[in-house]
Image 1 (tube, rainbow, N blue to C red):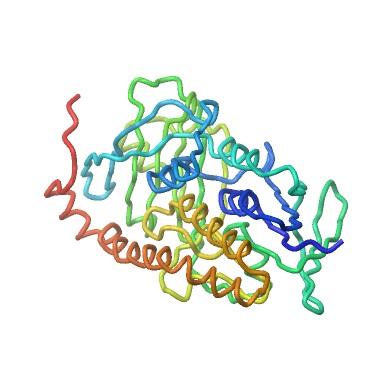
Image 2 (cartoon, rainbow, N blue to C red):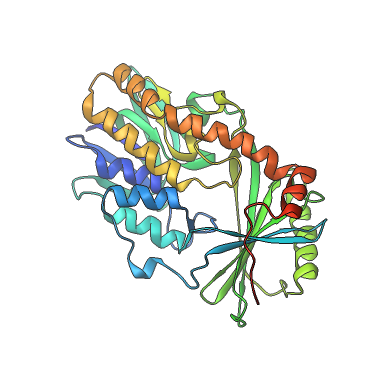
Length: 349
């Protein structure tokens, strides 16, 4: 059997694509399970909420976690300044959110749990090898779609992968004191050129950050000690630790949509915010755009052109966030903005 499309990865991008495809023979390969979850802060941004509303989707209460927080506590460890900024994120369990989106996929889509280990194109047919339960199975398709994030095998196999990467590391701690719950964005130029975060989720506290890959573990530990001292909190009793690489787009050429039957969506295409690393909204939008292109055209060259055109506004939006990043991550500019209190809110305690 030759599938029309094999979708690799069922995060928000892959599950959106699989849900919206019409009249196609589709195989979806997903490697997530309770022991293999994507490390993520698990905050649903307003742009992603709006896209879900566009499809009249509602999030089940079991996906949401406590507390729901309406401001971000922004801290600079070097200047020791703290400011609060209003935000409208939903605090959720990222794994359960992904599973909810998968549950919306029509029953005619064949879904298997496994990891794609190889893709070879021969005579316009993609031969895809998938490892499942210590067994390797092979499938054929006219098109493959990489929805597998920064580690995308489709991107590695068929396109140059020169985009800048960080190592995202986060730890979970059992939290008994819930009297001072908050979501924090942390800047510390001594240990990272990016940002870190503290998030309360039910009975846990998550501390994580994106670090330059060189000596990332050491930088994470140093910053963790600085955070614990600055906030006077205990970050020693680690429940679990997670890590994965994340993309940071810098140039327009970092966005790769694909052609000739090998396509990319979500973070695999480079669609992730270079300032906040939020990627769910871009994942949903790119999955939707490719689905519409597949549904309209059978000619793969037309699919490529259509998809590239549909995500042009998304590319422009993310490039503008590259400019925003300059103000966020430049120590002097950021501290001038924080010192002046621009757009911040006063918190009475």
